[in-house]
Figure 1 (spheres, rainbow, N blue to C red):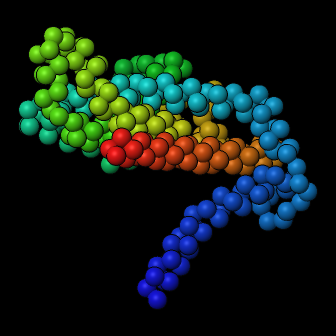
Figure 2 (figure 1 turned 60 degrees about the vertical axis):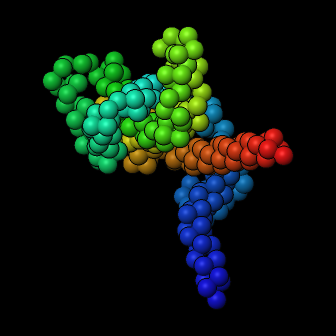
Figure 3 (figure 1 turned 90 degrees about the vertical axis):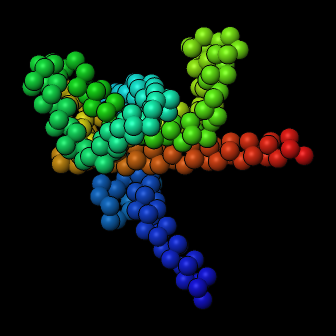
Length: 268
């Protein structure tokens, strides 16, 4: 009975999580203007998504912003993690504690703070995209730090010194001895920063130029309007994002399984 109720509970939770997404996916292939009654089957929402310049420019801008901010966040987060790892215990503890603040802080507070500091106090022009990129970097860097630190702790701390003893320069020791050991953490941190940037709404709202929209801000504004064609095209966009996430997860799991099988084969 315990096993039955456990399985039923898991199935109920999965149903609550995935059923709304599946319903949205079904309606994205119809001509329905509102969710509630299914009309004719159609690919028109997907045609609109890829042919309307307003939507394609919004998607492209969101992806470019996410990639740029995630790359900067990965560099800063990885550098900070390596620096803290090779610092004294007190310094490393202070850096780790300070890194927790943006993680637990509300996005709306971070957005307000960056807006006040860069735009109001320093007078940075909002149309330069600097406040927007800075906000996304502040959002993503702490999570990169948290992804890299465990990999550093799993690594032999004397590896860097050993490389230098063998004649490597500090830069060579870092790039050839340390970075390869923590690369899975760096990749995970980059993916996490990328996801956070794509998903963020509050920081983007307070720091973006007036003529720029990401997927999150565009969706919120579109749902308040009366353009039915745009709303239904966003159903198609949501479905595609969900499918891409599933494919990425499957690829990651297959890659990890292949690595484990390769290790087992080498051990035999």
